[in-house]
Image (cartoon, rainbow, N blue to C red; front, side, top):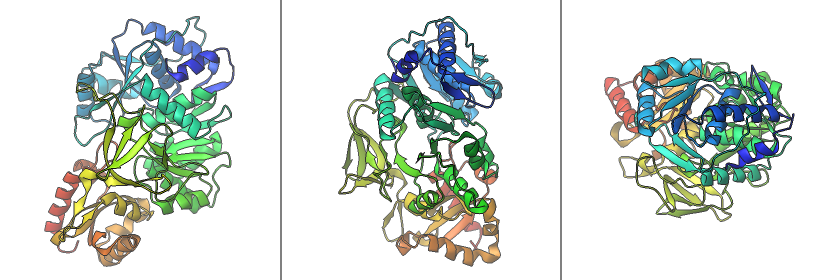
Length: 486
């Protein structure tokens, strides 16, 4: 049985607040009844159930009810394309999708059987008796339309949720503010399971991150001031947006915040330091789905700049031939449909461990760039430096002319001037200045701007925003051949 479900059963009579969204608020007792009711109704459902919906109280109930009913749960990211959704449905043999209205039609278009999530039944007499061997299959976005399914069972899930609970000293007084999709494993663990473990509460704001993406940079600050959370998880782009909003407004972050984990991509140490100066207690971590989503984490009293923190207790993290390898209870049991995995996992990430045990991630093995003089550069290192400029939403370092490098820049609303070719040399100098800590050969000698719509049409990024580096290199080289100005 998952530790979070066991904790919920212990609180089945509690009227303490558990989860709330813009429409619904449930106590622990009401949550228990709603999960027990749905789990009973899912008893005869297919063995593998997909879940595709916006964050909501209904998602929480469905997630835990599918697990309690002994089914395999496959969370479907809403940002997956139709081809990716079809691949996941077929690869995992999903017999039923629980979904909300926003995704029902797209699921039916790929031939899925769907059932709409409904308002929770909070007065059910059903008894929650979770079946053992809870299983998740987590599909990462990948770089193609055929992502792999990471198989995680009770051992991996219980280890990670307990380790996170201990690491951040989670307690019943915590209020978690959820703005990232629950389909992302880290958000599910931190926003759903950890609060249940300790009897805390979670406030779900499904619209805040979307609002930031649409240019409303103050959306996170507004949401947090209402919710007064103590704990949150963000990706670097959202942290930068919140920081920018505080700088522009002169406001202060809510004093209730005590821990804000940042992950998903490398975060510049300057961005973390600025966030903390503005009252955002931001701490960078590192993980991947194949290792339960969390491997290392900076913490209050145990944090070091330019690192992702120390590995979680109980994990054996080593550097073998420059690559980060992880051994421990959170390592997956293998990819769905492939040979079962046992033992340490080679992450594909390059890294080192300093003398005090802090892990430093240098970048992906398969993304290393080699310049015309044979020097290797991890692009993530330079990209993080460029992202210190609030005019830059995303920056990708790619191969350029004459064995040098070119930056592909996706400007924010503040970076419209970057498109001005008359200021190209001045903007390039500013871009190189951002990378002053890198050797001259690692800095970009050209840059190309592209808006989000054009980047999407060229399929330069995965559905979750990760760069498709081979495609980007080809795109950049083609653009450089078209002009002598850039």
